[in-house]
Length: 181
Picture 1 (cartoon, rainbow, N blue to C red):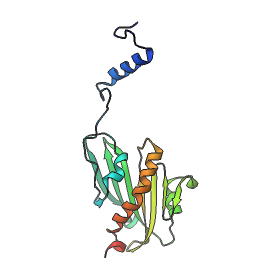
Picture 2 (cartoon, one colour):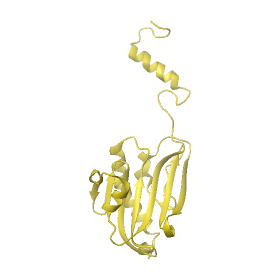
Picture 3 (cartoon, helix red, strand yellow):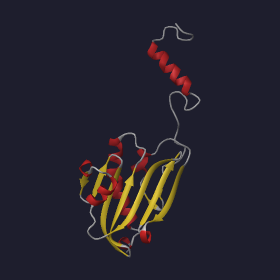
């Protein structure tokens, strides 16, 4: 038997070795902790942090950045990162009157039938879209795409996105000409 392994099985010895080797990085038994609060606002749009909490990994801080791009600034983006890795990427785009959810999915993934469609939304393992009427200065409809680039569990991602996309769209719509009263 090796040093310090009296009476331990090879599997237990392996577990101790892995734990000791990784102790300097994450410690034994717990791993990194989330040292930040899950945001209740994504680039100026209020969200329920409980809806998105499963998407947020351990880390010290969460960073958000906004951008506008495309012809006539037709697209707005919100990028959310933890430890430098993307957690959420949200893009809103002005669209023509005949633009559909199926069109939006086709821009995101090659295998459109892979997505689960429900009314004005579609969800797949790494993203979701919604498209709604919205007369504005740059289009007649508006699409929102949410991407989760680092999700380890596809079913958790789909479940979170299914709940989140509609709630987020309802809040974001309040910032658009069609949602202002």
